Amino acid sequence: MTIRYSHDIGSMALATRLREAEEVLIIPGDHFGLDRYLRIGLGGRRDLLREGLVRFDRVLATLLQSDPS
Image 1 (cartoon, rainbow, N blue to C red):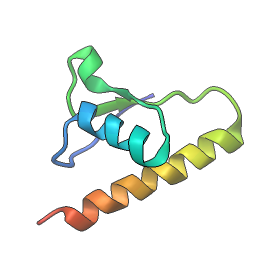
Image 2: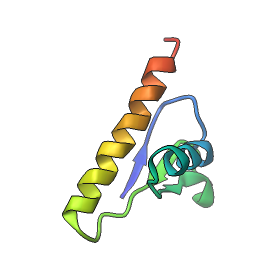
Image 3: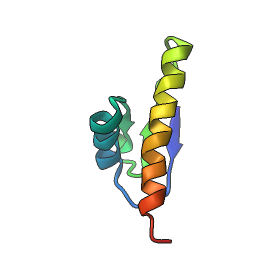
């Protein structure tokens, strides 16, 4: 699944932040020439996907807190 986001951070930087802060691996859209997009794998165990999304949400919450708008 490919998702688009509007935060002021490039997809490579966001993917790096997710990996370093929450140990979440996600494919940045930059790999496909699509900045501000992310590719999320939905296969595998549901509990791991759910936990990954919780961790993803924590990083997005920090971005919202630092967003000046």
